[in-house]
Image (cartoon, rainbow, N blue to C red):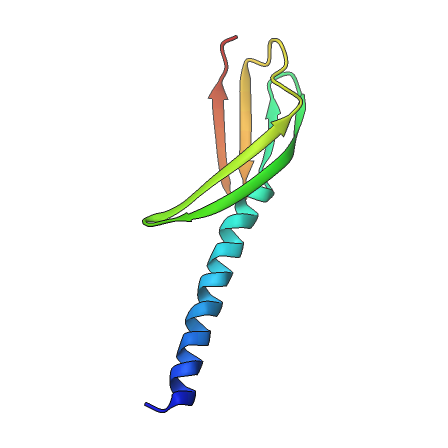
Amino acid sequence: MTDEQATGIAESKHAAFLARHLKIDNLWRTARMTDKRGTYYLATHAEAHRLKDGYRGEVTFRPGLATGAGELHLTMEVLSVFLQVTA
């Protein structure tokens, strides 16, 4: 294998890693949340971290949980999760 071929393979692997990371990062940054009363929560901070076995993401929403919210609906691309809230 020539040095040029080795460099091309390394660049290709790096590009694939970067594309995968950006896709995961975007998943968290585009997260949306509403509650049963129709309150829309704004994602104010989102990040993704690469772990040894995968990725971990965090999203912070504002405003705080509304009284009587009852149920939260979190949407991240094609993932949709309903969470019961008791407060």
